[in-house]
Image (cartoon, rainbow, N blue to C red):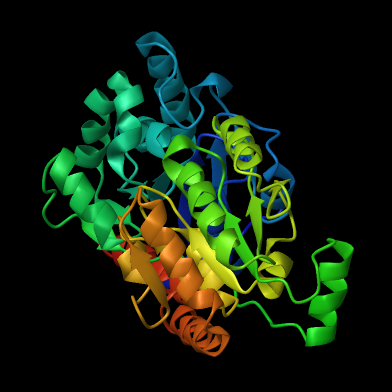
Length: 393
Protein backbone atom coordinates (compact mmCIF):
# COMPACT_ATOMS: atom_id res chain seq x y z
CA UNK A 1 0.00 0.00 0.00
CA UNK A 2 1.45 3.40 -0.93
CA UNK A 3 2.35 5.92 1.71
CA UNK A 4 2.89 9.63 1.17
CA UNK A 5 5.74 10.20 3.58
CA UNK A 6 9.35 11.22 3.98
CA UNK A 7 11.21 13.68 6.22
CA UNK A 8 9.68 17.14 6.19
CA UNK A 9 9.19 20.08 8.53
CA UNK A 10 10.71 19.72 12.00
CA UNK A 11 12.50 16.58 10.74
CA UNK A 12 9.35 14.54 10.18
CA UNK A 13 6.38 14.66 7.81
CA UNK A 14 3.14 16.25 8.91
CA UNK A 15 0.62 13.43 9.26
CA UNK A 16 -2.76 14.20 7.72
CA UNK A 17 -5.95 12.15 7.78
CA UNK A 18 -8.51 13.07 5.13
CA UNK A 19 -12.08 12.14 6.07
CA UNK A 20 -14.77 11.54 3.44
CA UNK A 21 -18.19 9.89 3.80
CA UNK A 22 -17.56 7.93 0.59
CA UNK A 23 -15.33 7.92 -2.47
CA UNK A 24 -17.89 8.28 -5.23
CA UNK A 25 -17.14 10.59 -8.15
CA UNK A 26 -18.20 14.08 -7.15
CA UNK A 27 -16.66 17.53 -7.39
CA UNK A 28 -15.36 17.48 -3.81
CA UNK A 29 -13.89 14.01 -4.15
CA UNK A 30 -12.13 14.94 -7.38
CA UNK A 31 -10.68 18.08 -5.83
CA UNK A 32 -9.24 15.95 -3.03
CA UNK A 33 -7.92 13.45 -5.57
CA UNK A 34 -6.12 16.27 -7.40
CA UNK A 35 -4.59 17.42 -4.10
CA UNK A 36 -3.43 13.92 -3.16
CA UNK A 37 -1.82 13.42 -6.57
CA UNK A 38 0.32 16.53 -6.17
CA UNK A 39 0.91 17.00 -2.45
CA UNK A 40 4.59 17.23 -1.49
CA UNK A 41 5.53 13.77 -0.27
CA UNK A 42 8.67 15.18 1.34
CA UNK A 43 6.58 17.17 3.82
CA UNK A 44 3.28 15.35 4.25
CA UNK A 45 2.20 11.81 5.12
CA UNK A 46 -1.45 11.33 4.20
CA UNK A 47 -4.14 8.69 4.51
CA UNK A 48 -7.86 8.63 3.69
CA UNK A 49 -10.59 7.42 6.05
CA UNK A 50 -14.09 6.78 4.71
CA UNK A 51 -17.26 5.16 6.02
CA UNK A 52 -17.98 3.46 2.68
CA UNK A 53 -15.53 1.64 0.43
CA UNK A 54 -15.94 0.45 -3.12
CA UNK A 55 -16.93 3.82 -4.60
CA UNK A 56 -16.06 4.77 -8.15
CA UNK A 57 -12.88 6.58 -7.04
CA UNK A 58 -11.73 4.00 -4.49
CA UNK A 59 -9.20 2.48 -6.87
CA UNK A 60 -7.66 5.82 -7.85
CA UNK A 61 -7.30 6.89 -4.23
CA UNK A 62 -5.86 3.50 -3.24
CA UNK A 63 -3.07 3.88 -5.78
CA UNK A 64 -1.98 7.11 -4.11
CA UNK A 65 -2.38 6.66 -0.35
CA UNK A 66 -3.68 4.24 2.28
CA UNK A 67 -7.50 4.09 2.33
CA UNK A 68 -9.20 2.86 5.51
CA UNK A 69 -12.90 1.97 5.48
CA UNK A 70 -14.72 2.16 8.82
CA UNK A 71 -18.16 2.91 10.20
CA UNK A 72 -21.61 2.70 8.67
CA UNK A 73 -21.81 3.27 4.89
CA UNK A 74 -25.43 4.43 5.25
CA UNK A 75 -24.12 7.78 6.53
CA UNK A 76 -23.50 8.94 2.98
CA UNK A 77 -22.65 12.61 2.60
CA UNK A 78 -25.28 13.74 5.10
CA UNK A 79 -26.95 12.53 8.28
CA UNK A 80 -29.46 9.85 7.25
CA UNK A 81 -29.23 7.50 10.26
CA UNK A 82 -30.12 7.90 13.91
CA UNK A 83 -28.06 9.40 16.75
CA UNK A 84 -26.98 6.00 18.11
CA UNK A 85 -25.39 5.02 14.80
CA UNK A 86 -23.54 8.33 14.67
CA UNK A 87 -22.24 7.91 18.20
CA UNK A 88 -20.93 4.45 17.33
CA UNK A 89 -19.18 5.81 14.25
CA UNK A 90 -17.65 8.65 16.28
CA UNK A 91 -16.39 6.20 18.90
CA UNK A 92 -14.86 3.93 16.26
CA UNK A 93 -13.18 6.83 14.48
CA UNK A 94 -11.87 8.27 17.75
CA UNK A 95 -10.28 4.94 18.64
CA UNK A 96 -8.57 4.74 15.25
CA UNK A 97 -7.34 8.34 15.44
CA UNK A 98 -5.99 7.79 18.94
CA UNK A 99 -3.92 4.93 17.57
CA UNK A 100 -2.84 6.66 14.34
CA UNK A 101 -2.01 10.00 16.03
CA UNK A 102 -2.25 12.34 13.01
CA UNK A 103 -1.23 15.97 13.27
CA UNK A 104 -4.23 17.20 11.26
CA UNK A 105 -7.68 15.84 10.50
CA UNK A 106 -9.17 17.37 7.34
CA UNK A 107 -12.89 16.59 6.92
CA UNK A 108 -14.86 17.01 3.70
CA UNK A 109 -18.66 17.14 3.21
CA UNK A 110 -21.41 17.62 5.81
CA UNK A 111 -21.49 14.29 7.68
CA UNK A 112 -17.70 14.19 7.99
CA UNK A 113 -17.69 17.82 9.11
CA UNK A 114 -19.57 16.76 12.26
CA UNK A 115 -18.30 13.25 12.95
CA UNK A 116 -14.68 14.17 12.24
CA UNK A 117 -14.15 17.09 14.63
CA UNK A 118 -15.94 15.34 17.52
CA UNK A 119 -13.87 12.17 17.11
CA UNK A 120 -10.67 14.16 16.61
CA UNK A 121 -11.13 16.13 19.82
CA UNK A 122 -11.88 12.95 21.78
CA UNK A 123 -8.71 11.41 20.34
CA UNK A 124 -6.55 14.47 21.00
CA UNK A 125 -5.77 15.31 17.37
CA UNK A 126 -3.93 18.67 17.52
CA UNK A 127 -5.54 20.41 14.53
CA UNK A 128 -8.88 20.01 12.74
CA UNK A 129 -10.11 21.43 9.42
CA UNK A 130 -13.69 21.28 8.15
CA UNK A 131 -14.42 22.07 4.51
CA UNK A 132 -17.53 23.95 3.40
CA UNK A 133 -17.99 23.64 -0.35
CA UNK A 134 -21.68 24.37 -0.98
CA UNK A 135 -24.44 26.73 0.06
CA UNK A 136 -26.56 25.68 3.02
CA UNK A 137 -29.88 24.99 1.27
CA UNK A 138 -29.24 21.24 1.48
CA UNK A 139 -29.82 21.43 5.24
CA UNK A 140 -33.57 21.96 4.77
CA UNK A 141 -33.94 18.23 4.06
CA UNK A 142 -31.73 17.16 6.97
CA UNK A 143 -33.01 18.66 10.24
CA UNK A 144 -30.58 16.71 12.42
CA UNK A 145 -27.64 17.88 10.35
CA UNK A 146 -28.88 21.47 10.56
CA UNK A 147 -28.83 21.23 14.35
CA UNK A 148 -25.46 19.56 14.81
CA UNK A 149 -23.30 20.96 12.01
CA UNK A 150 -22.38 24.11 13.99
CA UNK A 151 -20.77 21.80 16.56
CA UNK A 152 -18.21 20.71 13.98
CA UNK A 153 -17.42 24.33 13.20
CA UNK A 154 -17.01 25.12 16.89
CA UNK A 155 -14.53 22.28 17.37
CA UNK A 156 -12.53 23.01 14.21
CA UNK A 157 -9.45 25.20 14.05
CA UNK A 158 -10.14 26.17 10.44
CA UNK A 159 -13.31 26.39 8.37
CA UNK A 160 -12.02 26.05 4.83
CA UNK A 161 -14.31 27.48 2.14
CA UNK A 162 -13.91 27.42 -1.63
CA UNK A 163 -15.52 30.83 -2.25
CA UNK A 164 -16.46 34.02 -0.47
CA UNK A 165 -20.09 33.18 -1.24
CA UNK A 166 -19.85 30.02 0.85
CA UNK A 167 -18.25 31.96 3.72
CA UNK A 168 -21.06 34.53 3.66
CA UNK A 169 -23.62 31.75 3.60
CA UNK A 170 -22.12 30.07 6.67
CA UNK A 171 -22.14 33.42 8.45
CA UNK A 172 -25.78 33.97 7.43
CA UNK A 173 -27.09 30.54 8.41
CA UNK A 174 -24.99 29.83 11.49
CA UNK A 175 -22.80 32.59 12.89
CA UNK A 176 -19.64 34.51 12.13
CA UNK A 177 -16.87 32.13 13.17
CA UNK A 178 -14.45 35.03 13.34
CA UNK A 179 -10.86 34.13 12.67
CA UNK A 180 -11.57 30.56 11.55
CA UNK A 181 -12.30 31.08 7.87
CA UNK A 182 -9.73 30.39 5.18
CA UNK A 183 -10.56 30.49 1.47
CA UNK A 184 -8.88 28.34 -1.15
CA UNK A 185 -10.51 28.30 -4.57
CA UNK A 186 -11.01 25.02 -6.41
CA UNK A 187 -8.30 24.11 -8.89
CA UNK A 188 -8.75 22.71 -12.40
CA UNK A 189 -6.33 21.43 -14.99
CA UNK A 190 -5.81 23.27 -18.27
CA UNK A 191 -7.50 21.85 -21.37
CA UNK A 192 -5.26 21.77 -24.44
CA UNK A 193 -7.27 22.93 -27.47
CA UNK A 194 -7.78 20.74 -30.52
CA UNK A 195 -7.15 21.54 -34.15
CA UNK A 196 -10.17 22.11 -36.38
CA UNK A 197 -9.59 18.67 -37.91
CA UNK A 198 -9.71 17.02 -34.47
CA UNK A 199 -12.89 18.90 -33.60
CA UNK A 200 -14.60 17.88 -36.84
CA UNK A 201 -13.63 14.24 -36.34
CA UNK A 202 -15.13 14.22 -32.84
CA UNK A 203 -18.29 15.99 -34.01
CA UNK A 204 -18.69 13.43 -36.77
CA UNK A 205 -18.44 10.58 -34.25
CA UNK A 206 -21.09 12.26 -32.13
CA UNK A 207 -23.23 12.94 -35.23
CA UNK A 208 -23.17 16.69 -34.68
CA UNK A 209 -23.80 18.46 -38.00
CA UNK A 210 -20.78 20.30 -39.38
CA UNK A 211 -21.12 24.02 -38.74
CA UNK A 212 -23.73 23.64 -35.99
CA UNK A 213 -23.43 25.90 -32.96
CA UNK A 214 -22.72 23.66 -29.96
CA UNK A 215 -23.87 24.73 -26.49
CA UNK A 216 -22.65 22.54 -23.62
CA UNK A 217 -24.07 22.09 -20.12
CA UNK A 218 -22.41 19.74 -17.60
CA UNK A 219 -24.54 19.30 -14.50
CA UNK A 220 -26.45 16.48 -12.83
CA UNK A 221 -30.22 16.79 -13.06
CA UNK A 222 -31.07 18.14 -9.62
CA UNK A 223 -34.10 20.47 -9.42
CA UNK A 224 -31.96 23.46 -8.42
CA UNK A 225 -29.62 23.05 -11.41
CA UNK A 226 -32.05 24.90 -13.67
CA UNK A 227 -32.32 22.47 -16.59
CA UNK A 228 -36.02 23.19 -17.13
CA UNK A 229 -35.30 26.89 -17.59
CA UNK A 230 -32.43 25.99 -19.92
CA UNK A 231 -34.78 23.94 -22.11
CA UNK A 232 -37.22 26.85 -22.20
CA UNK A 233 -34.35 29.09 -23.27
CA UNK A 234 -33.17 26.52 -25.82
CA UNK A 235 -36.54 26.68 -27.54
CA UNK A 236 -36.21 30.44 -28.00
CA UNK A 237 -32.64 30.09 -29.24
CA UNK A 238 -33.52 27.34 -31.72
CA UNK A 239 -36.25 29.49 -33.24
CA UNK A 240 -33.56 31.98 -34.31
CA UNK A 241 -30.54 29.69 -34.76
CA UNK A 242 -31.97 26.61 -36.51
CA UNK A 243 -28.73 24.60 -36.48
CA UNK A 244 -27.96 24.98 -32.77
CA UNK A 245 -27.32 21.82 -30.71
CA UNK A 246 -27.47 21.68 -26.90
CA UNK A 247 -25.44 18.90 -25.28
CA UNK A 248 -26.65 18.14 -21.74
CA UNK A 249 -24.24 16.00 -19.73
CA UNK A 250 -25.17 14.61 -16.32
CA UNK A 251 -26.89 11.82 -14.47
CA UNK A 252 -30.48 11.86 -13.29
CA UNK A 253 -31.00 13.32 -9.81
CA UNK A 254 -34.74 13.91 -10.00
CA UNK A 255 -35.60 16.03 -13.05
CA UNK A 256 -34.28 14.17 -16.10
CA UNK A 257 -37.64 12.75 -17.21
CA UNK A 258 -39.34 16.12 -16.76
CA UNK A 259 -36.62 17.67 -18.91
CA UNK A 260 -37.00 15.03 -21.61
CA UNK A 261 -40.76 15.55 -21.59
CA UNK A 262 -40.44 19.32 -21.89
CA UNK A 263 -37.97 18.99 -24.76
CA UNK A 264 -40.38 16.68 -26.63
CA UNK A 265 -43.30 18.99 -25.91
CA UNK A 266 -41.41 21.90 -27.45
CA UNK A 267 -40.28 19.89 -30.46
CA UNK A 268 -36.61 20.18 -29.53
CA UNK A 269 -35.54 16.56 -30.06
CA UNK A 270 -33.29 17.65 -32.92
CA UNK A 271 -31.70 20.42 -30.86
CA UNK A 272 -31.25 18.88 -27.39
CA UNK A 273 -29.23 15.76 -26.64
CA UNK A 274 -29.23 14.12 -23.24
CA UNK A 275 -25.84 12.43 -23.01
CA UNK A 276 -25.95 11.04 -19.48
CA UNK A 277 -22.73 10.83 -17.50
CA UNK A 278 -19.62 11.15 -19.64
CA UNK A 279 -15.95 10.51 -18.94
CA UNK A 280 -14.82 12.68 -21.87
CA UNK A 281 -16.04 16.07 -20.66
CA UNK A 282 -12.75 17.80 -21.64
CA UNK A 283 -13.32 16.63 -25.23
CA UNK A 284 -16.89 17.94 -25.18
CA UNK A 285 -15.56 21.27 -23.93
CA UNK A 286 -13.06 21.34 -26.79
CA UNK A 287 -15.74 20.91 -29.48
CA UNK A 288 -18.32 23.25 -27.94
CA UNK A 289 -18.80 26.90 -28.86
CA UNK A 290 -20.34 28.04 -25.57
CA UNK A 291 -20.74 26.71 -22.04
CA UNK A 292 -23.92 27.33 -20.03
CA UNK A 293 -24.70 26.83 -16.34
CA UNK A 294 -28.32 27.66 -15.40
CA UNK A 295 -28.12 26.63 -11.72
CA UNK A 296 -30.29 28.57 -9.25
CA UNK A 297 -27.59 28.31 -6.56
CA UNK A 298 -23.90 27.47 -6.56
CA UNK A 299 -21.14 27.46 -3.98
CA UNK A 300 -18.32 27.37 -6.51
CA UNK A 301 -18.73 25.46 -9.75
CA UNK A 302 -16.01 23.09 -10.95
CA UNK A 303 -17.87 22.79 -14.25
CA UNK A 304 -17.59 26.52 -14.90
CA UNK A 305 -13.89 26.52 -14.05
CA UNK A 306 -13.27 23.55 -16.35
CA UNK A 307 -15.05 25.32 -19.20
CA UNK A 308 -12.97 28.46 -18.63
CA UNK A 309 -9.79 26.36 -18.54
CA UNK A 310 -10.91 24.99 -21.90
CA UNK A 311 -11.19 28.46 -23.38
CA UNK A 312 -14.98 28.69 -23.49
CA UNK A 313 -17.14 31.70 -22.76
CA UNK A 314 -19.69 31.00 -20.02
CA UNK A 315 -23.34 31.99 -19.66
CA UNK A 316 -24.39 31.41 -16.04
CA UNK A 317 -26.75 32.70 -13.39
CA UNK A 318 -25.62 35.51 -11.12
CA UNK A 319 -25.76 33.43 -7.94
CA UNK A 320 -23.44 32.17 -5.21
CA UNK A 321 -19.79 31.95 -6.19
CA UNK A 322 -20.37 32.35 -9.93
CA UNK A 323 -19.40 36.06 -9.97
CA UNK A 324 -16.08 35.13 -8.33
CA UNK A 325 -15.28 32.89 -11.30
CA UNK A 326 -16.98 34.59 -14.26
CA UNK A 327 -16.17 38.22 -15.01
CA UNK A 328 -19.42 39.53 -16.49
CA UNK A 329 -18.82 40.90 -19.97
CA UNK A 330 -15.18 39.76 -19.93
CA UNK A 331 -15.12 35.97 -19.60
CA UNK A 332 -18.83 35.37 -19.96
CA UNK A 333 -22.32 36.67 -19.20
CA UNK A 334 -24.18 36.51 -15.88
CA UNK A 335 -27.98 36.69 -15.84
CA UNK A 336 -30.65 36.47 -13.12
CA UNK A 337 -31.68 32.93 -12.11
CA UNK A 338 -34.98 31.35 -13.21
CA UNK A 339 -35.30 33.71 -16.19
CA UNK A 340 -35.39 31.71 -19.47
CA UNK A 341 -35.86 34.88 -21.51
CA UNK A 342 -32.71 36.56 -20.24
CA UNK A 343 -30.80 33.28 -20.48
CA UNK A 344 -31.86 32.87 -24.12
CA UNK A 345 -30.83 36.44 -24.92
CA UNK A 346 -27.39 35.84 -23.44
CA UNK A 347 -26.90 32.63 -25.43
CA UNK A 348 -28.07 34.26 -28.65
CA UNK A 349 -25.75 37.20 -28.09
CA UNK A 350 -22.79 34.85 -27.88
CA UNK A 351 -23.77 32.61 -30.81
CA UNK A 352 -24.20 35.52 -33.24
CA UNK A 353 -20.82 36.99 -32.26
CA UNK A 354 -18.35 34.10 -32.63
CA UNK A 355 -15.28 36.35 -32.64
CA UNK A 356 -16.32 38.12 -29.46
CA UNK A 357 -17.27 34.82 -27.86
CA UNK A 358 -13.89 33.33 -28.70
CA UNK A 359 -12.21 36.36 -27.15
CA UNK A 360 -14.24 35.89 -23.97
CA UNK A 361 -13.18 32.26 -23.91
CA UNK A 362 -9.50 33.13 -24.20
CA UNK A 363 -9.88 35.65 -21.37
CA UNK A 364 -11.51 32.90 -19.33
CA UNK A 365 -8.65 30.52 -20.08
CA UNK A 366 -6.15 33.11 -18.85
CA UNK A 367 -8.18 33.83 -15.72
CA UNK A 368 -8.50 30.12 -14.91
CA UNK A 369 -4.76 29.64 -15.28
CA UNK A 370 -3.95 32.60 -13.05
CA UNK A 371 -6.51 32.10 -10.28
CA UNK A 372 -7.96 28.58 -10.41
CA UNK A 373 -5.13 26.22 -11.33
CA UNK A 374 -4.58 22.90 -9.57
CA UNK A 375 -1.01 23.94 -8.73
CA UNK A 376 -2.23 27.07 -6.94
CA UNK A 377 -4.84 25.08 -5.01
CA UNK A 378 -2.21 22.56 -3.91
CA UNK A 379 0.34 25.22 -2.90
CA UNK A 380 -2.20 27.12 -0.81
CA UNK A 381 -3.46 23.96 0.87
CA UNK A 382 0.09 22.87 1.71
CA UNK A 383 0.74 26.31 3.18
CA UNK A 384 -2.37 25.94 5.35
CA UNK A 385 -1.20 22.56 6.63
CA UNK A 386 2.26 23.92 7.41
CA UNK A 387 0.82 26.88 9.29
CA UNK A 388 -1.32 24.56 11.42
CA UNK A 389 1.47 22.05 12.01
CA UNK A 390 3.75 24.87 13.10
CA UNK A 391 1.29 25.88 15.84
CA UNK A 392 0.06 22.45 16.84
CA UNK A 393 0.84 20.84 20.15
